[in-house]
Image (cartoon, rainbow, N blue to C red; front, side, top):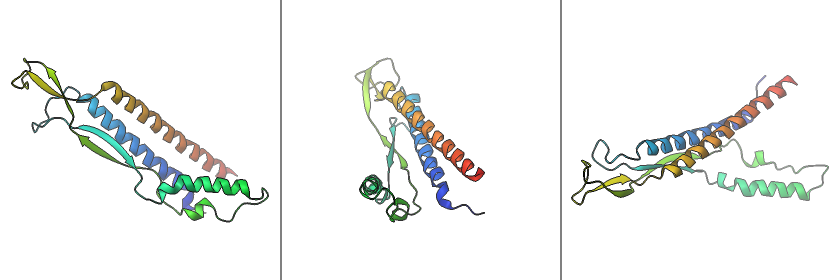
Length: 166
């Protein structure tokens, strides 16, 4: 028996979400690890890394309004039947979920430490302007979203398993 590919879109969507949060978690971890780095191996200041999530396909940006319209259609039609145009027919097999990229920005703060080997003529050292508390909050948020995606995968597996048992 061949199973339709649409049953596995939830896994592809969750995988993209898992990947996005893994990248965000890695960026926050790297920022925390380099919070006191004055220079990189090539002598330049450390660039703060931020994970940016975006939906590349403009058709996917319409998902919210399309879903709302479908809900309105359900509210306004006769309760004994459904409209023939379903969301699946309007949106064929598309990859849902964000694409994630790392953006690097150089932001520094000056700290007075004339004994430091990288201090300038006035005795100030340039450190990356990283707020450890904000980075920890980003890590916690990414971790929780990652766990939510794992729960979605587990729920989908359970639903498919129960469907096959029937």
